[in-house]
Image 1 (cartoon, helix red, strand yellow):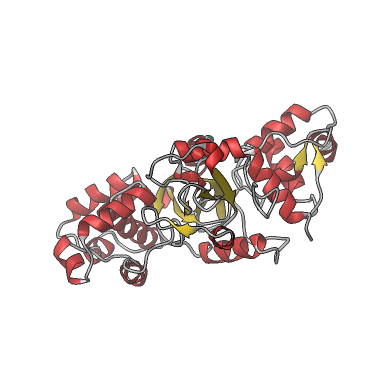
Image 2 (cartoon, rainbow, N blue to C red):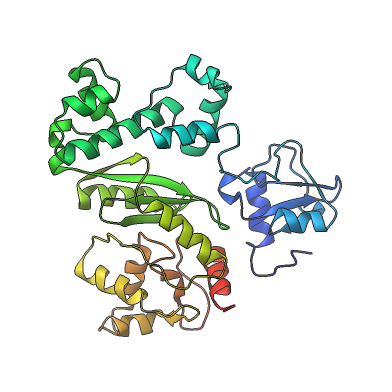
Length: 352
């Protein structure tokens, strides 16, 4: 038995390999039931690896419960992976209200949270310490104020620094440039967005969304480097005016309630790439196009390989729907997020 929801999961061998490697990039994608214990677990569970013949896979915890499994006490699969836990949420809300906030360990303890616990959570889910996150938020806020005309001294002292030299050093460490260069530089604010296919890494400028990739995609680091060059920008975590709508529209899309996205996009590239990406957005929801048909759509029927390369260079997944392009024989090919994700997205759209 694979799942009551066929076509929504990777193949059995891929899932067992993810379980063996405790691959947290598969969190939220499948749940494994262990027949010998009656327990269901996350892909990243640290418990002993069961034999493949003793496992069955489910799309979600509800399905695993329906088949009589009970949640693991090691990995706590009933808690949504990547979502800030209840003990952390008040502190994050406080930071959202005041991005210039500085919190020392004793102040964190006064809020009822162990500083070591918050450090572990941020290292696991964001690859940085909590203090590094706070510093990045403060520098992001300061950058915006300086760029919009404020003198450096005001955001420096509002950020809690006693000297301009200390502020300048921290600013450069976070952004890669000194405050006086803010008028010629950009910041790309980044965040993680949870989805049924795993976490997405999103980036945005003041003008719009410039990056939306699955966080385990191999091309992600390359795309980040390219955007740094194209936009003369550095990446920092923080809030952006477009993230709330992006999260909302993605949730509506995965719930089958949205077919088109209404968000400004920032898509620097060659003229051919821009033409190819624009053409991708013209493929109707629920339909597919072959690579040769896509080449004709951009005005050069011989440019099949160039179209495929442009699809692979697409930095804004799902919204610019490169997953809707398939091979001439109807098979799935060429999707950086994984063919199983491509199948999921096409199955989702063709259920309309």
